[in-house]
Image (cartoon, rainbow, N blue to C red; front, side, top):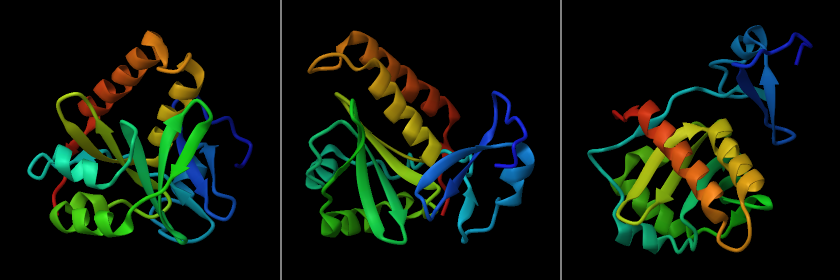
Length: 178
C-alpha cells in the first residue's frame, strides 16, 4: 500500500470497494486493524472451529452444494458462496433458507466478520469440517487448486496439496466460544 516491501510473512488488507485483497507491510496492516468499516480493512488471523457443534453430513447435504469445499463470505451485498476451481473462485447458488436454519444450530456460521473472514466447509469421506478463517486462506486454497489441478478429477498432486492445506489448517484452529 505504502510501497514498503511487505516481506515473506505479511498481513493482508481488503479493499472493500474494489473487492480485492492486497499485501500490506506491518504498519499499513495495523492502520486498518479493528476498524470494522471503511474502504480498507485488515484481515484478521483467527482460525476457529466448533467441536461442540459439528455439521452433520445431512445438514451439509441440505445446502445442495455439489462440491467438497466451499467458502461463505458475507458482504454489504449479502451472503455469497464460492468454491475453489481450476478457473478460480467460482460463485455458486446458495439456499439462504437452508443456511439460516443451519446458523440457528451452529453459531460459528454467523460469527465471521463481514468482508475479511469466511466460513470454509470441507466435506471429506467420513466427516464435514467447518472453519471460520481469514479470507486470504480461502484464496490460498483457490490458488492451490488453480495451479495444481489436472484433468477432470484434479490428479493426485492437487488432492495431496489440498489435503496438506487442510492438515495445516487443523493444526492452527482453536475452539470457538460464544
